[in-house]
Each structure stands twice: as structure tokens, then as C-alpha cells.
Image (cartoon, rainbow, N blue to C red):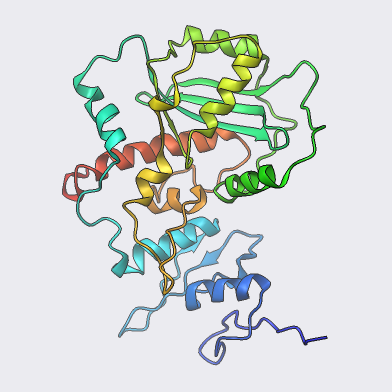
Amino acid sequence: MPEQMSFKCPHSGNEGCQATPFNTEKEAAEHALWAHHDASSYGSSCGSLLCLYRNQPANLACTTAFKDIGHFKAHILTTHTPGLGLFKGEWRATKEYDERVTNVKQQDLPAGRQIVIDTECSMFPRQLSEISILDRVSGECILNTLIQHPQGLNQSLPPTSATVAHGLESLSLQEPQKVSSNRSIPRMNVHDVAAVLQRAGVTPQSLVFTWHMNCTDLEILAEFLEAGNYHGILPTKQNCFPMIPQFRQNLPSMGPGQMKFPMGMDLIFPMFCPHSDLIGRHGQVLFDCQRTRLLCDVFDHLRKGVDDLE
């Protein structure tokens, strides 16, 4: 049998490295986090991930400490990778976003609201298990609940290769798995959820924002309501604006292979909201919903041009 390659690197000063082996230990902890700003293989039970970037010519280490690896990576990209130019110039939106969202401030939005949605669901079959909805403008929490199904979550159907592929693609854009058990938030059934949405003024004219590549969160909620015989509460996909495509078209490709910029919430949020107390908070979809709302605000500001930022 061929001999397995050893990992090596995790840095240890100027005497270490000389790169290659790897394969893997997560490619030698992402080559000691992008060549020696280190983060000592991420494992920090006490929550101290030190940035070891050294400025030149003084050769002084940065030593900023982080509790969250996404925050650490965001720090490197925004502080120690000046060539990326993340905040240069004015950001662009898609044509659909411009037509439907940009003009909303000059128009009345009849009987609707701008809302931010985040969901959690079982993958096989797709079944809603938790949902959070915020008002996009005020930040008011409209809904934050676990979902109660009459027969419990149905996990009886085996996955096909197509559903596995779709599920894995979705998971690759999400943070580490959220856990829905033993929570101190309400449990609602479909009738409760429909009543809350109707009282809150959510209508087919509402605009929906999600942190996703597509309208999956809206689709999952619509399927849940329709299964309970509730129709005509939610808008269609034409009024849904996934924010990942809006950000991605304004962010640079990375590395020699010109790979697409990573869009995980755990990286993107601390890049643009580095002082928020939402960084590193997991365990409820509410946190992702709150982060998405703040990123919507960031996007709107960046579209005015960096000189207009407060």
C-alpha cells in the first residue's frame, strides 16, 4: 500500500514550515492559516486565537486575539490582505434588486412588510423544524419558534443521490449545525404560525431577504403553510432576495485558482460587522436572522459608495 503523507506545518516560528507534505489534518490547518498568521490549528478551549501577522519592516506581531475562527479569518482578509480591496468603490446590486428594493423607499409598499427569514429543516424529506422572521427595517422579531408537527418530524424517506447533492450544497453555505432540542423558545404548529404572520401584516406584497443562494427559506415556509391549507399569505419568489449573490458579485476571486470568495456566514459577518456581539453566537436561527438583517444594511450602505459610510 502507498505510504500515507504526513501533515506537518502548524508553524512554530521561523524554524518551522517548509510547507508541503500536508494531505490533510485539514491541509495542515489551512496551511497554518493562510501561511503563518497561525491560529494554532484552531483548537482553543480558552478562546484565544492570536493573530501572528508581522508587519514589515518593524517585524512586530499583530497579536489581536479572537474567540471565533471565522472572526480570525475575517480579520486577516480585511486587515492584513490589502490587495483584496473589499471596500473600494461603489457596490452593485442585481437588476432585480435595483428594480424591486432600491425604489421601495420612494414608493408605498401596500399592505406588506420587508422581512428577513431564516429557517432550519430536516433534509430528508425537507420539513421545517425552526423559523425566525424579523422586520427588515425596525429589527422587530415577528416570529421565533420551533415547529410542532402533528406526527413529529418525518424522516422515513430514504435520500436519493439528487437530494443528497442538494442537501450537501445547502449545508456547505451554513454555519456548524444548529441544535433544536431543549430550547427555551416557543413551539408552534402551522395554525399558530399562520396567525402570527397574518397579524404581523405579512402579505404577498412583502419583500423577503435571506442569507442564501436561492429562495429556499421562503419555499420551505410556503410548503409548511400550504400543507396546513394556508395559501396567499406569503409573497412569491419574485419578491425574495437571497443576499449571497448580491455580496458575491462584489467580492474578489481568491488564490491562484481564482476560486469564488467563501460566503459562509461565520466568515462574512465578522468581515463586515467586526465589533458585533453576534459574532460566534450559534444555536438558534434567530442569530442568523439578526446577522442577515445587519448584512442587508451593510450592503445598502456599500452601494452608496464607501465615502458615504457613517
